[in-house]
Image: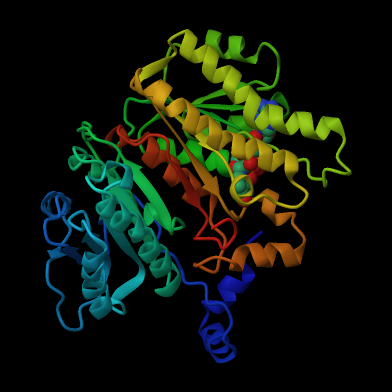
Length: 441
Ligand code: NAD
C-alpha cells in the first residue's frame, strides 16, 4: 500500500537519481501533530491598498504565536505568504499581486503555504470589482502548480462581515492539517463564530457520528475527531463489527452496527441517539463497470449507500430535532463526482449527488443554524486504491501538484476543520483533498 517511489525519491540516493532524470519529485509533506506551532517559520503578510482583512489577520496570527512580517527581508524563508486582496476593485489593481508575489516567489519553505484573501464576486459592489476578485482564482491555482516543494495555494473569499470568522480557516490552511489541500476556493460567510476554548481540542464537548468508521478514511476521521476532543459514535455494517469495535475502543467511543441501506436504518439510528452535533456521511462503496456492462444491482446499491441513504437519515434526524443547533453535516464526495470516471457512472453520479445535496441543503439548513459541506478526496492511500492496477495507481499518485497520494488523515483533518466551532459561517462548500489533481480541475 505504501508509496515506494516517494520513499525512494526522498532517500539520499533517490534524490540524485530523480533530479538527474527529471522524474516527479514528491516532497515530504508537513503534517499536524498536537502541540506543534501553527507554522514552522515566519509569515509574510501583504495587502492591496484598502484591504479590510490584513489588520485582523495580522492580530490573530500574532495572538496564535506566529511571527508576522509586513515587508520581505533579504534571504528570509517564509512558512506562508498571505495576501489580502480585498482592496482590489478593478483589474488594473491586480498588479498588486505581481508586486507582492514576484520578489518572494522562491522564498517559501518546503510544505509552505500561500493564502490569498478576497471578496466573493457575488458580494462585490461593482462589476469591475467582481471581475477583479474572480481573477484571483487564476493566480492561486497557478501558484499551486508553480511553487513545488509541497507548497499549497488557496483562495479564501470572505463575505463582508466575516472578517473575524477567518480564524479557523487560516489555522487550518497554515498548519500541517491541510497538507494535501491545494488549489481550492473556500467561501466564508458573515458572522462572528465563538472561538473554541482550546484550538488544540476544538471539538471538546461535541458528539459526532461517523459512518463507515471501521476502516480507511472513516477510521481516520474517528481518530482525528477523538484527538480534537469529540465524543465519537462509530458506525459500520455488522460484518465489519470486529474492526469497528477496535476503532471505537481506540477512540474511547461507541460502536454502532447498522446497515445504512436497511429500510428501518434512519429510525433505528434515531432511537439510539439523543442529539448530535456533527454527522459525517463517510460510508461509501464502488461497484465499477462501464454502463453498458453494469447490472441494475450495481447501480442501485451504489446510489443507495452513497447518496439516498444519507438523504433519508438527514431528513429523519432533522425532523426529530436530533441534529443540534450549531450542528454540522459533512459529506464525502469524490473527484469522480467532479471529473467523471470511466467505469464509474454509478459512483460518479452518487458523488456528484453529494455535491448537489450540499448546495441544495445549505440555504435550507441556514435557518436552523446548521452547516453542510463536503470534501472531495482525490487519490488517497487506502485499501481501495491499493487494489488498483499498478499503472492507474501510479498515474493517480503523480498527476497532481504534490506528486503523491494523500493519506486518510488528510481527508479527516479537512472534515474536522468544517466541524470546528470556528467554522460556523462556512456552509455550502465542497473542498477537494486531492493535492490539486489535474483531473476535473
Ligand atoms: P473503505 O471501503 O475502506 O471504507 C468504507 C466503509 O464504509 C467500510 O468500512 C464499509 O463497511 C462501510 N460501509 C459500506 N456500506 C455501508 C453500509 N451500507 N452501511 C454502513 N457502512 C457501510 O473506503 P474508503 O477508501 O475509506 O472511503 C471512504 C469514503 O471516501 C467513501 O465514501 C469513498 O467513496 C470516499 N472516497 C475515497 C477515496 C480513496 O481514494 N480512497 C477517494 C474519493 C472518495
